[in-house]
Amino acid sequence: MKNNYWFKRLILLVCLAIFSFNLFGQDKLLSMKMIYSVPIMKGEIKSSAQKDSIQYEYIVDKRFWWQTFDKIIAQSQTPYDTLVNRFSKTLKEKFNREFSVDETKSLIDNNVKKIEFEERWFYDTKTMLIKSDVVAFQPIITIDSIVLEGEDLAIKEIFSYPLGWFKPSQASKKSDKVIIASNIEFTMPIYNPIPYQYFFNHLEAEYSLPFLEMLIANAQNNKIKTYEMPSSSTFLNTIELIKRLEHQERETIVEEDSLGNVIEKDTVIKKRYSCQEIDYFRFGQKWIFDLESLTFSKQINYFAPVIRLTSSNGEFRGFYPLFYIRKD
Image 1 (cartoon, rainbow, N blue to C red):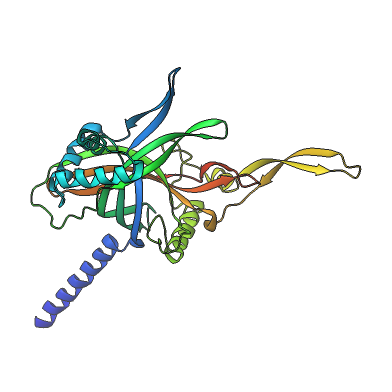
Image 2: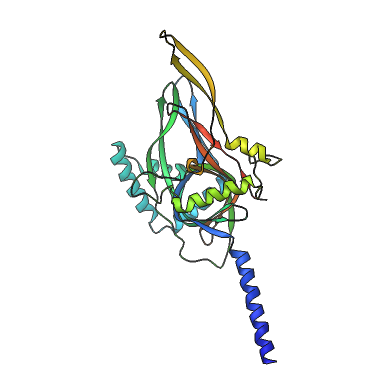
């Protein structure tokens, strides 16, 4: 009887181990520390006879973001008056003029246009979706200007001021969650060539390449469903997926014949993208903020590996998502 008891205990432990592996073993580490910023407002240039101006609109829920920001400021280790004074001094140094208290407060209230996050990244080996664990975050105030790029007007950031990292120390027993964004889409670089900034928009190749190789292989072997767009009603079949991986570009080649005449030829160049060429990620995420514990959490809606397209002379031509995968 005694031996039978220990045998049953052993079977139970083995079953628990198998269950735990199935439950947690699908997640693999992608990055222990990823720091990046996401815009929460977008600007549009409005032209009139008098002047050109920038009009902004939130791409998050404005009401819940203001509620969140008020809570963050109230719980900050820096008193609000001290924050205003420090920010005013920085503005004076940057723009060489005095900023009134009202001007400074208005910029704090209205010019937080992006949030910077520090996260740990994991991926599910079954779905290949990336999970992010938000370790810390900080709101960033920015000031933009209108500049001329070629023949077009463009918005350029000329000043940024981080309000300081916020790292919740303890989880609250209470919970009061608000949805800041049901779906916020952003495209971010994943490799940073600047020395000593390896945590900023940077994935180590030893982690990223195995992930990307598995992602492409699982997509080609129909282990995961892939889509042309996040809202596509049908998933890509194998032939359609291969065509997307073999992206075609039309180029004009200028040559001279034997008599010195200039000849222009249109030609189509086929390209098969490799994992090393994937240098951007595109996310669609749901953002949730707990007003009690002051913690951010994110749920992924969809994800795409992205290629930065350039012409033969190196001119930027846009972003090309190879495919999308999404939450069921």
